[in-house]
Image (cartoon, rainbow, N blue to C red; front, side):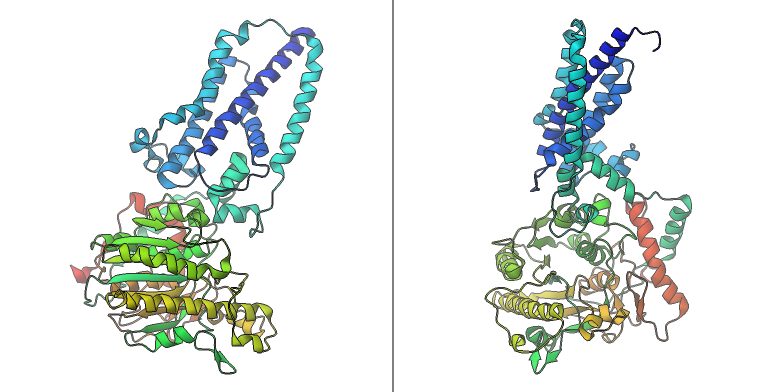
Length: 589
């Protein structure tokens, strides 16, 4: 470079800067078309500026390519990346994780169906780059040297504009309900990707990505081979063909059920349901969700697998292959559907519903976005859809009203208002549970009126803890027992002798397989059915604290605890994609 005349050097720098700006604008246009194909609601504040910042960073390597011929393969690579995001989204309704690009041989299903995913409008993604290639070959390189007097002005403008773009690209817009940007990526990864752009997504993905060592992989395979599939189920004979309705109640604890304060019941209607014939109530279910919260609850209940040690499965591994309750029931001729008050992109539920093999997903079953009346809107809109489903069916209904911050409906009146409760959060929580209690009672009553109830097994359970019992008591120390959520089965065809024992959330999956006569399914989970002759009476919380365990052997405790590590590994390695399910139970052969 020392041999290059100063005048030619300045022109070279100026020429490269102009090309860089042009290519930045063209990549910006390509990204705009890519984001346009991801059709979800998002907050647009500063998003366009962030995209410009992404375009500048993606085009940055072009400044250092000595041979312009290298521009063309680089642009091709970038455009293929943009297209892969679009095609992956069309299949899985989520953004392709960076880890999937390492599996070129398998691309999680894209390689076999790429032509089916291509749409004519995808040409708009590559059109800017193609236009540039044509323009450069035919016009740009034939242009004469620009006047050097414009060099300083152009570079100054570039620097100034770049500074403005970087500022706005890094500035965070308000994200209501999310304490951090990672919180938004964990709960709504597609929306976060569209709002904060590609580079932010790369940073998040790199931060959560954990590879699998050979030792971990072998550990998981050995552990899975040591488990006899079906041995964790009771395998009792049940009448087939009953519907299964799972009501997954937001933040429902066990401690308010059956409680009364100065003669006022917190959940009077659920208390009535518990007195009905064929009702089973397990009050000591340990919630076992982690970073994925509500989405983890759906994972555990529908697959019998515990959540990731770090991160949410719905954000990191939505394209994994899962054995599932919907898949088991579909083998028996069931229709499967999930009903949501919130948007399907919340917790990436569209992608996860597909991964769990739900056939139908109904979202935004609401009249407004206010939590206060969410559950009555959800049940009112879900019921007619439920009645149209071919029987037998499995319907998962995910409630929302009892989500923090526990805002009561404006029309609701309660006798609790006349009672002094010092902790305002406790008061609000109990009041909103009275509302949820009314909504569930009304829905169950309508099922009876419509003739659905008698031919259905109805499960009511809490998705996770929110206000543990120690907060009600004003006690700082958190015990495992403080976190219990309920597991209620209405119209159960089976009985259990273990309703007073501690169970884990992971035990629901094999229990439901027992209830529905699906114990011959290829994967019966890592928990144990509550209908078995013996159960562990021991479960661990996400922090490692436990409940139960009296007269439980250390080997049983160790096995239950090891299932956390096993689950984390099999999720990260997408175990069920490339490995067979568990070995069959020898007693059933």
